Amino acid sequence: MSTAAFMGMGPTELIVILIILLVLFGGAKLPSLAKGLGQSIKEFKKASKDEPEPAKPAEPAKKENDPATKPPAAS
Image (cartoon, rainbow, N blue to C red; front, top):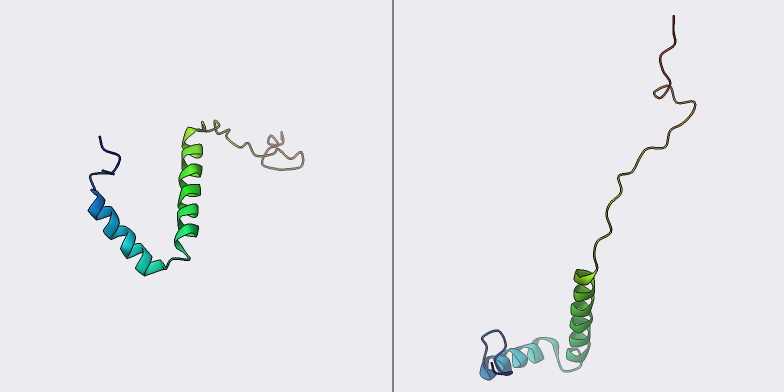
């Protein structure tokens, strides 16, 4: 597999995409956009590797004076 072929794109397609990005965003913004994209990919990979913690069901706190938790009065 060639390193120039990225996702089925050849070097010509990559150059055209880079020229379009340069026209849209300008030369000054491209490094900051690339840095942000790299950080986003890094965070996504980190989050996908972390195992999710098992969710604990929240139990409502019982109040001593709550009439809903007291047994009915004997008559």
